[in-house]
Length: 243
Image (cartoon, rainbow, N blue to C red; front, side, top):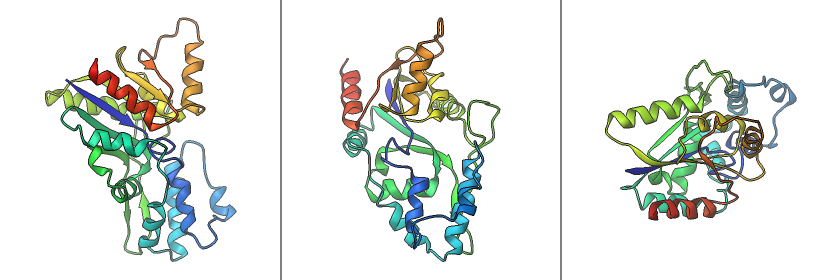
């Protein structure tokens, strides 16, 4: 029986938002108001398509975008945590479910040598077109009214677990580590002996506390354990492996 670690990426594995960090590759490190004001709630991926298009129009090269993305800081203790996971692949599976995109996450993990820790990344597909502009697509479509239109993390996690189960892999413990509002939905498919780990002081922690305060609401069965660094998560992971 293995352990499954599920990570969000922005403000979880890395200590910033990769989608806003990319603006640093522009000469003035800022977007014009026409682009900024084009965001519609729940449609972040389409907005990022316009951001990357604008960056391309400014003749920022793909190499420049990549080198800037590789400077994003990891959250404290995360490199130690991911290194530990990479050294224990026989007993720990690890996936990332993120609203960022394939290129950003790949670049950042590879530059730090941490891609070996992660078995699969579920995120919005990105590629450079013939003009050298990055195009970002929605990950999938879904019926969930709690989640952004491009990604329901619960749907992704349930599908992954069912495919693993079909392949004979069952998990003794699942740890779900995240920070944001879109990390609440996948928390609902965790079991009583799993752990949902919201980052202290962030949206997910507040949403879980609110649920907890509702009478008779036991929709999140997993144990809730807040974290402020990768070290907290690593301690919990090691303790569960020894029990």
